Length: 371
Image (cartoon, rainbow, N blue to C red; front, side):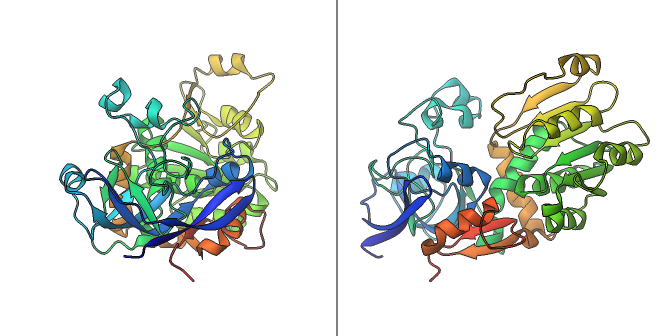
């Protein structure tokens, strides 16, 4: 095993440097992951442009790799062996608090960087901390005793497994939080990684009507939504979206609206409220929206709409995501559109954010060992 580890380190807003770190000596309850794929999503775009910390960070929170070295206690506790391929969740909970004991470690204070400046979370924790390798934009990543792992089945490629995080989010938000199930009618706003993953989750759950909206710029993604099972796709810049939705539902509206526009303003939420059925629909929102003046509370209460927020995923959602990816039922390999090496982290992040020169980008895979 090499004595030095190459990593892409975010050193300032919109700036990355390649640095070498010493190969850490792992404790008996720790391990090293040889990173094969680190997925890049919209969160990385935001964190790259406006980092919450000034300290250097190895980004990369959607990580797939092989256990290269494992302490005896770590291997016994995690049920893994050296050579196993795993999907590593980005949360690093304490597993002692009420949230962790309830299986909701994503809400644990130890891993919540928004409220805890010393939080541990892959892709967010500074490389100044012990063991340094706290993100997937590196050849190796350190795994503490409380890392959350999912062993991957034989035959599932690392690049396809790299879709596990958006797929698990789609399952968590659409099925567990919003309650989409058999014969549900669903509007998914935004055909990015999360929206397309939700389309698959809803189709798998038996939804009878799946409508996906996007912009003219999303033409390739809307086409992909149709290939993955969407019944209706709508370009909101060229069509009257509400008119199309009502026509598709016979004037009834949809049961569930899943907003995956991630801070695109208030228009998608307002459309979602109008598109929901007359009584007791569910609107699930995620992303960042700093303010919403003149929010239509009266219309929401008159229609008895339930509004939920979505963030992260559970262990069960990840297990189902891995099973879905391994099943081959949907052509999910089509989502993995672009790959980059460590030297091209800046270009990779710009590609997913739509500010680069790469076209028709859906999911970006960073391959730390790619030349």
